[in-house]
Length: 585
Image (cartoon, rainbow, N blue to C red):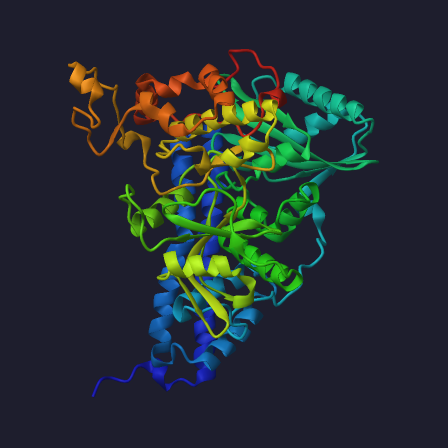
């Protein structure tokens, strides 16, 4: 007879207690390492160790899955034949809820528990008995706000600015501290004068927000007209730290926390308090997006799903095919009154697509781990979503069952989606250009070219540059969302189009020369972009270098040399003037 395991002798109640403690301990390990990595951000900034900073960012992105994988195995081994006994998990949830009740980040701990249960049960829809569908606790009031932020009462703006910058306690000196303080206070004063208001209180988050080569001070100003955001951008230059920009409006600060940006590294004891602080200055931004922007992407996904469920309870709108041209790889649908889209991989891809389903999944994983440079939309992967059949138009459901039958099923008045990606909805660029006036169209096409360049310097080649694969955000920023042909720029072989040797070669329908799988011909791009005539000249004026192999090869060389190229998430008009010898080399 096989030996009897010690766990098999335990009662269900005792086993539930032990398993709940294992999950709790796993979450504690995750938190410790998350904090350790996050705490390193200031040192990376001070030492200008950008490659280590990128390595930290990647490690932190991978951390959650690594810990969850380990905990799942431990729970499986402990529970044995009782692994899927639901009453054991009901008890486990109750015990776990008691363990996390006093934690400052209990909402993140609930999501961690859900990650374990969904891995083991592969639940279709949700199961409130064994998951935290709704929070077990209410968010408490911030009893000690001074632990999160420092409050200033500015009698003199320049003196207050001095106090704010001194509180950063950075170990690297400023290039010109007094001049930065003068310029910041002058910029704020001019802004307030233009708004015909004054400031009587300023709150500044004590922790710096780190991302890429930048550090950010985030605060809010109290005025008779309401709250005004305040963000100061700190960079490193030849002579030390300097203030590169001052952001004083909701749109500019919102872009810092964009769904197309990499996640911040910021130390905070109670994440929910920081989220509430940011929401106070960015009221149009979803709670889910703020959590995600701070690196709590799994809980952000939880909040996004709760938003969706709450919206479905209040709305009678039906899912329908999303606006825009149909894709060859993905089918996309949306709710007309909810600003997200659902993207499902089709069962078969029409020629000339040679990519596979796994290639598409891998590319979405690459986007998750990559510096999105403000140009790639962050996508949340969902499994086993369940909706009522009545929420789908007949046209949509018929198409889903036709092109994505391996992913979508319909039975018992329910529609189940086995796997899909959820993203913020944006306006397809080709549709935007059809409706935009001349000025808006030209701005968009200039930013379209800049999007391709921003992706290039972060080692991403978009592949398919058709306008339909790009979108316009509510801030009129251009982003890219078609990931099936993404690849590292350094893997591409950029070539000049060979000169025809004979007249017959020029007339030939097929190329008269060999084309490798990784060969790319920039001078051909214009033929495949589909630019309308009214913006083509504008594109050529600003981005003709994209049609030249030199731009692409030079960018490859910079990346291969280890250069990390700064992409500023704000407009030049927000930057402060600096002497040329101050700026980063």
